[in-house]
Image: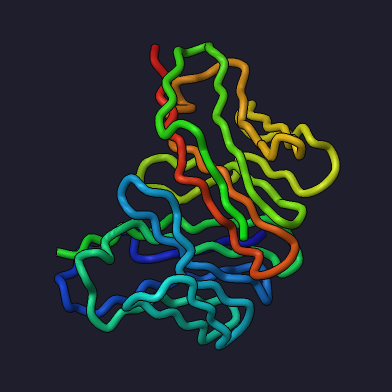
Length: 112
Length: 114
């Protein structure tokens, strides 16, 4: 069966520090991968999506970036965090030609 | 472009009462529609989805939703609320073209009163 792992679960980082959140999927190949952010009291915003290794599409201009170094690995990064980067970050995957979306358990990021 | 509107950011019902969470969508192509539930500090769990076929979709935990193309709606219902249903619910839309990414509504927080 397919599983998705996302870590860390919580993170407190100072302003200006770097960020690396990792997401891996098991039990499938060639998944579509997504990073969403959920700010306090708001809905979910798509940040990045990827349809293959090295293929990243950005939805919202910001100081975050994403990379997909392996088929089932998706990384969200920042060189210098801002206070506004605080939020709940969710990784998700879907089958390339399917309709299901499965989410990871999320990372609560607090920038102080 | 696709969009989702969830009417009511907060809904409160009594235990045992009908749950109705409203969702309207906008899509220029045939939509795929989803309802997700989120418990505090957790990821999203799929309740149900509509892709093609029968317009009344049954999901987990006794929830169901009906796709009404003429009304561009996909409202979520449950005949009898349980305390454990208290959570945030998100409606989402995607399509068979483009990036296949979900566009979410802003969410509805459901409270269940004893």
